[in-house]
Length: 126
Length: 443
Image (cartoon, rainbow over all chains, first blue to last red; front, side):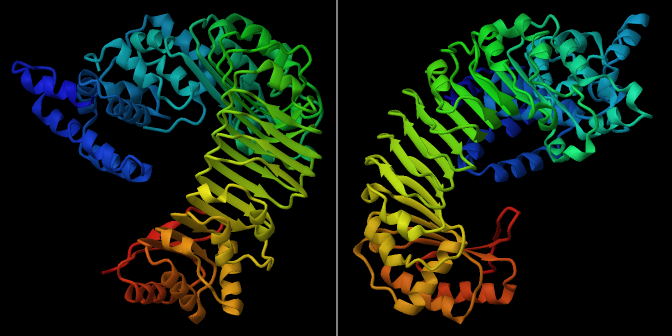
């Protein structure tokens, strides 16, 4: 069932959704998953290895690929990775990570800052 | 980031550790601000550092009260599906003597507090978890179960920790399938109200629940149960026709009655049982037994013929006559045997004084895992006798205590490998308090 979408992808010649580089990362995952499904620690190590070479921007593409291929475990894994990467970091860090800019009205941001002042304890420096 | 459609951004935001992370994300951009509100769960623990800051005069004024944070987070969030609030485990270590006065600020099972926000969001809530602050909750009874049963008609999963709970006013919750009560004083002596109000439970975890006298779990749909009893009630009864997995840890119940015909995975830790009325377990394949007196416990056990996977351990070292042959008299069809350090020691000592006769069932054994506390020249002769009798053994793992030096441990494995090369040997190392380590041998 995991392989239906993959087959579709290969059959679909004009596919722009998933570039080749991404495909080579995502597609071997189902097999590896099946092999070491029982052993969570090994899977974690494998996942760490995989991610060492991946840039944050690529993660976005990986998430889209996993979503398109309807591969739930990979989607969960990549989303968790992004979440872990921005965990406990400052607002500026998160902005830089995603390449976003503050698009708030002048008063809006201060208001939110005040409302959520409690959440700023224990935040790492950049 | 712009390429990610909102549903995928929500997937990422839903995986942030807790709600304070999510709150910080709201300040990043308008998109994240509005999408954060779509995350359907709230998870917030009061950390030790927050607690200490709220008690220190210098920092106290700048700390927002925890209850206020919760109330604000939950405001107008009808789409919430899961709420999990509590105090960090480390706060459980704070002693009574350190606390002055009778503060309320972390008394989370306080009905007055929960009533401020639960009725608004309760309708759609599927999962609720409250880990209270024992020092503030243990001396007063809470009617929170009644409130939850009135507000949360769709609740599937409920977890309450560190509180004193009354069952007055508790109404039936037919949707609830999972209930966990941990370190609770429950005013429902025989569990009658629990059985009556949560009839469709599939998972029940009662961990350190006090206030029980002759507790009887009687649940027709129960599938998995974990029950740890720290005091010694007179009797423990479980009537659960669909129960498949049970972990029961108790000390010295006067009687233990189990009517669980579909049980297939059973972990029993027991110091002593005077009366052990257990009907047959025709499906019991996986059994773990821990006791001070393994010999006596094993001989009380019915349906041994069906058990395929067995784990045994002795809690205190007592020479009770427990031995390898006896194991196979009661469990003749084992394919997997796991011996904890206490059990291994008892069995090995018996072997050195009385030997091993062998039983037919030993030929069916495929895999052994043994935990060793020490390793000397006699250990090998014991293992050799096992190998001699368990002629179809294909895997054996020896997990040796850290205090045994590496050359000795390594030497033992080499000797075993030489004596019986057809077996796959694995070596591990254990020490109390940490996870076991597997050691890979050089070829």
